[in-house]
Length: 250
Image 1 (tube, rainbow, N blue to C red):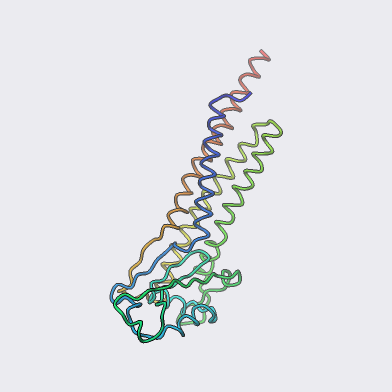
Image 2: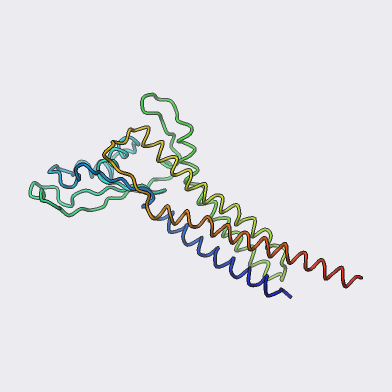
């Protein structure tokens, strides 16, 4: 039999784990992690032909300097797997109006691009710090989600076997998953800061942290609280079971 306190802790921990998984999954799949805003002259009000820019951004060769320049100029947004810019929907001369309509163009980072080597701008030397930060920000959320999924399988097996011992493993998995979620946010912010410094972001371009990053950040304390509840329930139940066993033996 499981005490009501332990059962309540398991239910609350499972709900927190589910919320954290949903938040982190939505954050990983969306592009609103970091936003740029050109504050001097809104680029969509410029009377220029954006066809070349669209083709270069969507189908051009992957070049970090090129796409970062587009992000700075065209109010871009950056995510773990996506990069987006806002350009005028119409590219002809009669689109030079006060507030022309815009369209958002998004391109996903392919798997080879995620693991590509970052190079310093003025030299051909490999930038190890930015390279591994970028790789970690891609891998850590996948590790976090995988651990939560694995802990769910362990929990199901524990229920089928009517054993409380695997709850300790579930708590450890959630603890590591929470650290991975926090590491994702830290690696991403550090990587963006180094990107802005490397390619000299203009002073008139503002920065704004997007809601996707906040979702990933919220998943960290949720996973930690779930881990604390699972670990507490496993340890307390073990102590309670040990005391009952000792009492029966005596």
